Length: 187
Image (cartoon, rainbow, N blue to C red; front, top):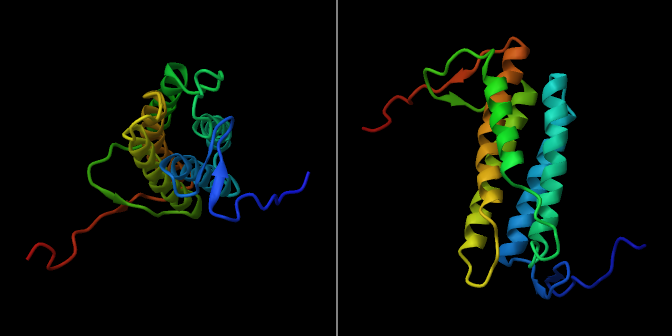
């Protein structure tokens, strides 16, 4: 199979079992941003992360790939491609709780940073929040079908990535980077 088909040269792409749409359509923006998030998690996993964090991110990458397939399919439920639901959301919540256990309580806002792995997880968190916004946009398009669970999943995943960035710093003995209000800000 050739990797190039030339069918997208006019700025359109085909949905799974559906019509051709513009490459900047809300559905394409949504699954494209989920794909970008998945790639960011792959970059994070290329770093020296704690093994339990790496294993968790591997599971999440697979779930995001499932979500991408769901989003690439206009009638995903009818085709049996609904992938994320209460069990996956509960698993993220459990992972957040587990990752927070060894961390000192947050008493101030922190800046993205610390070691390289944590910094990449913070970037992944921001991409996750953008993916969530793209799903919210898609859900508001008349005639589009999108279950509520993927939006909730991405909301929890953003929280998890924040906690995992902190945990990665903690495991490396690197302190969170506190936000310090700039001199003159608000004047």
